[in-house]
Length: 261
Ligand code: PGA
Image 1: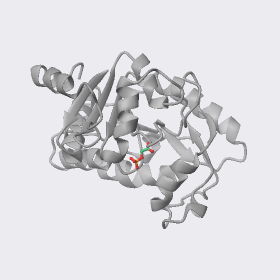
Image 2: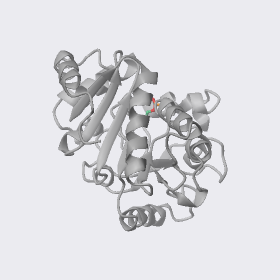
Image 3: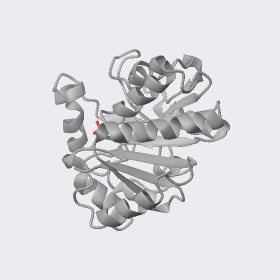
C-alpha cells in the first residue's frame, strides 16, 4: 500500500485530480469509480478546474457509482445518483449516459445489485476507484464485518453511519435511509487502482487500523492490504495516529511521482 501524507484536504484533492487527469490523457474512455460524501469534493473541484483550464478533456471518460441509498424517490437531491450528477458529471462535462450506478429505487433491489455487478464486469473494469472511509472503517457502504469477498448487495447501515450522514438530511437521522446498495469489497478490489482519501482527525483511528492494523472484516478498509495497487492519501490530521508516518513521508519524498500513475 502506498501512503501519501499531504498538508491538507486541498492538497490531497489536487494530487488525486492530477492522477485522474493523467489517466484520462492516457486513456480517454477510462472508467472512473467515484465516491460520495464530503471528502472527495476537493478532488472534483480540482479536476473541474483542470477541465475548465483546458488541461484535460474529460468528456469521453466514463463514471460509475460506488453505492446508493435504497428507497429514496428518484431525483431526490441526496440520492447518490443526484450527488454524482451534480458534483462530477456536470462540472466535468461528461455525458450523463456514460454514468453507471445501481438503481436504489428498483422494485427488486437484489436483482438491481446483480445487474450492477454484471454491468461493471461488462464495462471492461474500473480503472481508478476513489474511496472515502467511514469513521467505522467502512468503504463504500461495506459496514464492519462485511465479507471481504462480497459482491454488490443490499446492506443495513450502522447507527454510527446514519449519525455521520444526518448532516446531508437536515441533521435529522430519521430521514437517513436504513438500507443501501453497495459494491461489495470483492467488487471494489477488482478495480485496477484504488485511491482512498481521508481527511480530518475523526478519520485518524480508521486510517491507522486500515494501514497498520491486521486484515480484518471488522475494519473493511483493511481489505486494501490485499490489493496490489492501493494508494491511501491522508492529511496530517488523519495521519496523526500512524506509527510509520515518518517512513511514509520519507518514501514519498524519495519518489514523489507517486508510483504507477
Ligand atoms: P465522508 O464519508 O467523506 O462524508 O466523511 C466517507 C464515507 O462514509 O465513506
